[in-house]
Image (tube, rainbow, N blue to C red):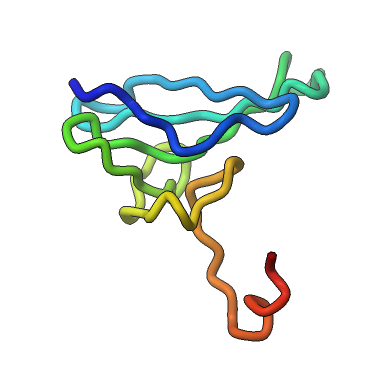
Length: 95
């Protein structure tokens, strides 16, 4: 198995963790440690994305149980592997 080289550093009060999603993919989670939620009995987590164990390629999530398309990690954020689909006007004001 290839060692994971993650492209982002966890934002303040967040942490990453992984689990084996399938024999082929590793699921990458991001956990918000800034506030405790009573409704979920802990800190909320969401799926950042997926990584192919063999090739090390990152994929965006469709949801927590479905792997999406391959993504360029330069276009992802520390919060999600889903890339922004901006029109030209929105792109002009985005960073």
